[in-house]
Image 1: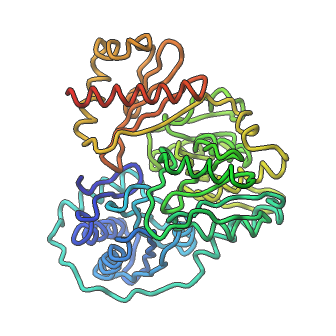
Image 2 (image 1 turned 120 degrees about the vertical axis):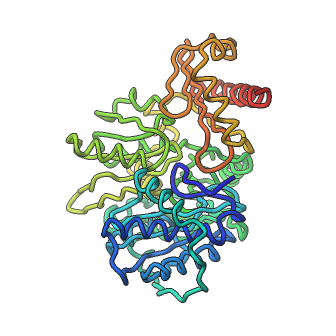
Image 3 (image 1 turned 135 degrees about the vertical axis):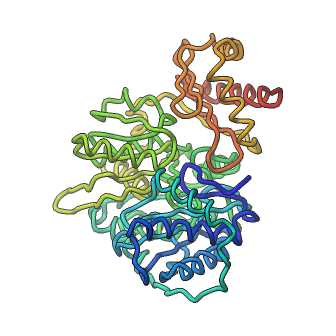
Length: 475
């Protein structure tokens, strides 16, 4: 695996990223901003990190690169990605988050933010071009002593929720918080308690656990069920490693998929337009809650681009979200004289709080609230350890060779429709969906399926992954 940009940020093996690459990619990002006159000498650059073992050392390299660029590194410590983005934007400064998000501990990455928000695909291309020109020619400097901030980023992030949602809006709820190794594990509890919920910490870990809210590990599925069976909860919540993607389970410990949590959030906030990738459930168009649904490629930069287009076309309230549940608030929301400012980067706390607020307000279990959206049953999984070139070969053949696609999907009645917007999304004649795409963050092939019943979705996912495994091994 080489260091490269994925769906959200730069990712690579720790052994490949630590050292010159982390230093030189940071220099390239800052040089891009300097070339556009967006940074003056002596400007501050904020740096945060997650809790994986390699993050402190990589953060030191980032600090050194900032200093080498004539700028001032500001160490915000370990904090959620959206908290760093919110704080840096408020200070009109760029930011860099050291995180591998949900991927395993032997990998890590960097997320870059301009002063006005998360970088886009044009920025990524410019960074790659600048890095290619400077490469290993940038000399590593000795560690520097950055400026350090206190609790301001955490407090600002907490106030975002405590100032907008009504005091006591979560009163009466009993919420389990799966803490694992999430950098947001304590602030989640602080915010939920601040809004009146009774919280119960669960599963705190001292080693890094790669919780992927788009493809839960069987260990996490079992934990949620066990906790729900052991004591009563209205919901069990968590986040991924850097706190920008939510995990929400209902009272039975059943995981509520991220796109459904995103839809609940958008409905709570009164969105007339939602922007979401093609991997999100097709029920969004049928549920009747949104005047417009805009589909994009997978990845937060594409969702941000879609949000901008929707706003330019006159949408009143735009909420973006991904199938992993990370919500990007495209428009400020006003309610009862209180304002929730826009924040166009993935956030886990907003969907968690909105989902819990619906339970508290309506006095109905989350499972019933979720059923109101009439989503098709969905499941997702992945084949790990699949090099990108192998995935590309399989997907390319599937998209280009109709006879091949019809043949391998014969058990499902052949092909009804193929959408190549991002990966290959196949709809078979009975309306079931199988969507394959290569991960942009790790050497794996992702698979998303939709069917009328959960048991059928699980069966279809198993069939699809077995099909892909066979075809990739035989190619």
